[in-house]
Image (cartoon, rainbow, N blue to C red; front, top):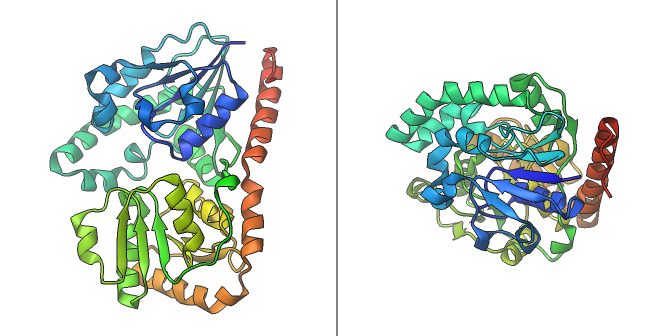
Length: 366
């Protein structure tokens, strides 16, 4: 059985790339197809595989891939996958739009339908600026049409959360199997926490980091913001108790997670790995009670939820958290995170592929 793994782009090691690593472990001889790759930014596990890129790599796509969205459908459809019996696409940007062989099995692991052309399109257009925003508005209808059409090229969908499964059903009218992404528990350990709260992750509009900055400035509580993309506007909102670290490596991130009083997670995420990484460190989470956080943060056990994405609602959640904080057990929080382990993920993926490949008559996963 020849296997192709298709990933949208390989320019870092975030949640989607951790899933790709697990797929590489399940299919050690698979070839990888991706729009663009930065080989200095990916893991050794992924680098060991043969990686084929699209023509976008040759026209500056490694650095400017986000600006080349209108060309991505063409780039994906130019990949020749005629030699592969199983194609597994990893989708958050476009990936499932490849053209598999008619008798091949195409499974799409969907981290999210493309946010910037679906439910979050207006927000991305506002943040992109006048020219880029106008380009997104013009390209949006054709990209949505292509995105829906390419869903028909997928035989089976895997969703990374029940929240994403509902979005797949809404936009593509397709059912999916939920398999939550893995958390690398070995990177995290329980330590003595400090006094500062933490926001962590790449700073993009939908993560709503500004809510945390404004709320903690008003409450005069210390907050550390870890991640790339801090704007001048965000800095202007910050009081003296807010610290911006910029991007950090994995070891530094693990340290910040272990030492924080609690992780603050104000965005609506499709799943959200960072809250589970905090919980693997024994630290509680204050999360917006929508999206993937409903599947990972247990109120009163591993943290608290707040309903509205407003400064007042977040501030109220912080106060509620501080009332129950003495009752939260770091070992119990860590035990909850262990339910999302890498081994659990591999076992569920292996069972899924054994079942689906068995139905097609193709040799199952070794």
